[in-house]
Image 1: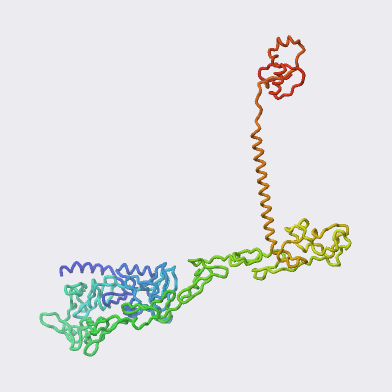
Image 2 (image 1 turned 120 degrees about the vertical axis):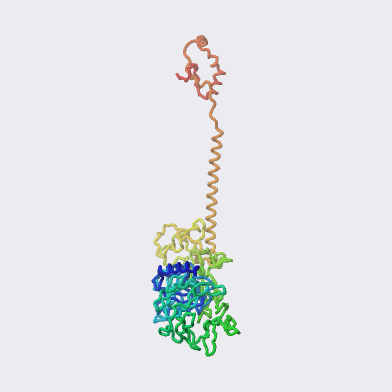
Length: 620
């Protein structure tokens, strides 16, 4: 008892600090609570985690039944958050029982589901599930909604190692249980490990306390002190007992029951004997006259010993259209790729129309059972090893009599002048031929010297009719021509023959000329380009020759005589010239002719003399 007192003091302190009043249901090794507090899914999960739990799952039929029992005992008719969510970025998968959602508490997801309505198909927003009770809006079950929306209640689950039964009382009294997850309740069928019980006896005694401890040496959990509390006095109102009050010397008074009855949880009332307490079955237990009967949850069968439960392999009965996977307590139907679950409980499979998805194929999409196939429009072909469509160049097959122009998905023929393109653009047909004869009613007189009467066919002289002429044949001399008699206009001047146009009088050869027109035009263009290139080559050669000649011409050498000038000889005598002109020897006939050749200057027959200068030659 001394070792228990510190623990009791701590529990009393926590209990005195307050606790939340909520509906609680404890069974097996877990407790479920209903909290009437408006919050979104995230806030509700944080509230449950703060007390050591999570938002309640409903992963099996038994767990779903406990939650329904909790809501019914609380009289709650509104929705409440469950621990089932689809995170942002995950896609809803209609072929799975949980539709891609997962339990926040983790563990085996299972195939149990109870959807009241199919969840919205999405991959971008977070979705959370609420338990919806039955009502005018529809049947009971799961309904998804945005996680940020608020609901007026949420359900939590808290798991424990074990439970203690009800605290035994010798007399009448009231017990209030303060659970480890912060909830106070007076209606518990079992108390989880660590629960503190406060007992108020009707006799007016001071409150007594007890705590659920364990595990014990022999296993299990028990109250300490074990009780019964609230001792009775058999001499006063039968000690508060319903049937018998036993006052044995040396023992505190206690209540008892007649044969066939057992004491109730309040240790004062009597109930008919229940052979199912404690539960001898792995599943459920039903009292029967003289014994009990065990039962199992759906998906399990009673074992041969009549007490245990074993899993049933539902896939042996082939309940699924495609594939079946057995899981504990149930099974799961799977569809092959390209199919989605359909029908009751998703046991059937329906083909998915992949072509309804945007951008399934670059051009055309053909849906086939379980898959799809991409194809291309006419004029395109599949790229090898891919789904892309490449344009087909129909012009490579030379489908046109003349030129051909390819465009994405088709082609068209470019018909030569005088031909008409077919309606589909894939061929050419001859146009109307223009007659080449001048009617008799022409205003040009027969006696005209420029137009001989015997001429009935337009001459094809290349000098007068350029084949590359763009003037159509219809531009010739009209019937009402006003050309005077004296005008000499040859046939080839007024009516030029265009290439590729049928001409009357040419006979069967007109079609050949029509087909050769584009080819001859190409020859003329190529010939013109060659001539231009030749002219450019000639011009470049001429420029190169001139530069070479300019380099060969050098400037004349500078002569020493360039510093002097020639002047006429003075009338002095020969002797004087010889005395005063030391350079007179230079002007001998031989030297003078040599000087003229070197200087390149033309000098007359008169005699001249050189006058020396100091630097700049000066002429006289």
